[in-house]
Image 1 (cartoon, rainbow, N blue to C red):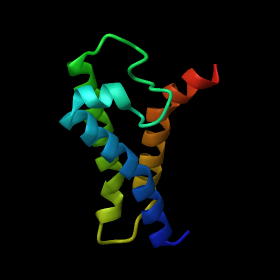
Image 2: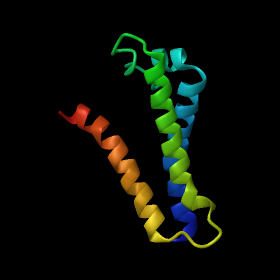
Image 3: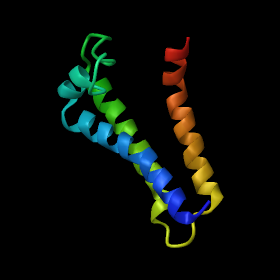
Image 4: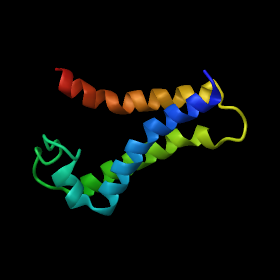
Length: 103
C-alpha cells in the first residue's frame, strides 16, 4: 500500500474522533443531547447528564484522534509499526461500543 493511501486512511480514522471530541469539550450539554447527530440519540438515552463524564469522553476522543494523526506527520515514510499501533488503538477503543450493539 502506498504512503498516500496510508495517510488518507489514518486521516479518515482520526477526523471523526477529533470532531466529536472537540464538540464534547467545547459544548458538553449540546454533545450530550445531540450525539451522534442523528436518531437515535445514543448518549442522552443514558441520563442523568454528567458534565465531567462528557468532558472526559470528549478528551479521550480528541486524544485518540490526535494520536492516530501522529504517523501522518512524520517526514520519513510511514512505517508499519506506528500504523499498526494506531490501528490496534482504534480497534481496542471502539470494540466495547461495537460489542454493546452486537449483543
